[in-house]
Length: 454
Image 1 (cartoon, rainbow, N blue to C red):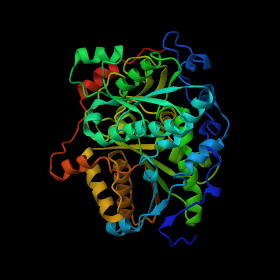
Image 2 (tube, one colour):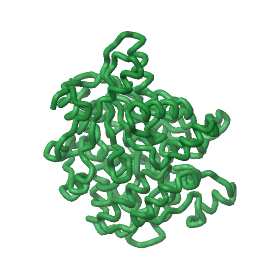
Image 3 (tube, helix red, strand yellow):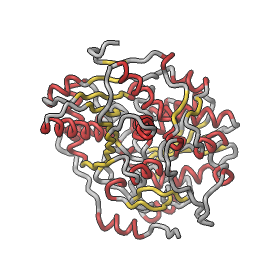
Image 4 (cartoon, rainbow, N blue to C red):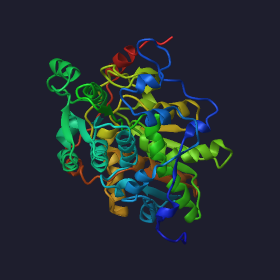
């Protein structure tokens, strides 16, 4: 395909047949998860109540290529491969010599990258006899994706949705219910931990950490249940590498190669899936790429968090993982990018940050919406509030290239559309969208409660 084309499309025959595992190329492995009781590295038996054997094996695997089952690829064919687009109109508006490309994951049935792992997790669970999956969701993109995947593989799905997003995004709830899932606002009276939170604060806006605790507890409420996580863990990021692998091939079609990669980060799944194939190539002696993670300033785990062992949930039911964390007790402000309101960052993303292989930036909510509006008016796609952070990062980097006269190639992951987030845009245009700020005292208190690991 000529590089003068705006969209670079792969046919199904050229779609990835294997996931890429970054652990195969890291000389220094990340610190292992620890059992919260013994403080010893956990084993497969510790994870068996929550995850099927195949996903546990993927979690710890060091094989570079892990085959994508045909049954998973068959569902992927509904929307994959997704397009890579040259953002020429945005380039012109910015007056930058940089070339801007975006990988558009909003073409999926639920409008984001999340089905890439939801389909795989539902398949492996169904294969091992799981009947019901419980999970949490922030903005609702993960919850709707697991609901969609559950329908394909005959699984009941129960979703605990962070209450502030449950109230802000009713159409995400409706989408989950359309796909057959049950959607519950979290914190809820359905679980012991949810009731504890509500006793302390009946008006709690909730958090992903709280919703994870509820979803984990709910596994034990019904036989045949397991838990599914939409980000953070190695096997989740592994499934998302279809994004980066496709992007590599599409850039070859474009006759181009990236100088800078940009992705938004909350728990790390879309970012890791997008950049890890390029990072692996670099670690094997290939082209060096600058990799920039962009996060919300109101929940800045990479830029303000501590690299330490912490619980993945507020109720302290999960294993301890070493990650950049704001503390399991941290309750982020209720900003609109609900998918980025998580207190910790993926251990694998955190590890490569510690190794100096990636960098991070944090942005406030209002500048991200301004960038999203500029992108929509030039490229015709309304970004999700989460994806607006990547848009803002890419625009700033393109303007930096303009100031230096550098014709760099910048590629970013537009991980979802904002069609279910139009109330946020309505509030933005009406001047009602307030800046959400980080509370230094709350952060200090939360970090002070981190577990002691010797």
